[in-house]
Length: 184
Image (cartoon, rainbow, N blue to C red; front, side):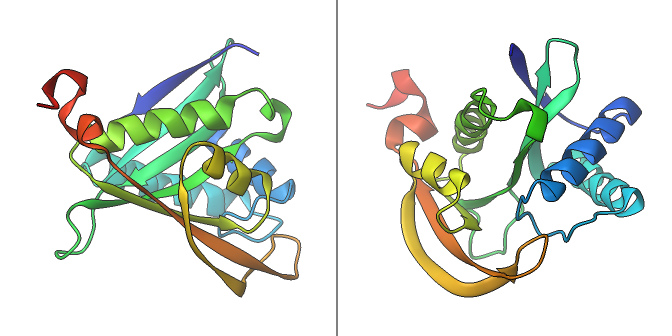
């Protein structure tokens, strides 16, 4: 599958519909992204509308992956707005790939781009959490994220039952923040 990664400053109606579908289908497929199955269309739309507002005012970076037909097939966010004592940190959130587009390199491409953009705005530490021992946790390890620890029985799986979560972090290298040519 051919795909492109795009940064959205706001969510237009076509993207809203496709992001809503991606969220609903990701949760239906077992994605542990803070929602229980089944996710209502209204709940998903409301979620994305809030994200659109947050993105528009610069509180977060929103990336989408689009297939060769221009349809959203994946997404990830970097939450830049943090408490006063953590201006250097960002939270990576809601990484999801539509089930029909998985195992195509989309998640890895989204993560690499969100890392680059997050470090480029001056953040030096990123954190995220994910269900322990699932595909996403293996991807994060592959991309150099460090395990901070795991918490048992942290959340409910979308179809019921408890799951543990693992927290990861990644620190910027000087070249990530300054740019390759400015490391001196």
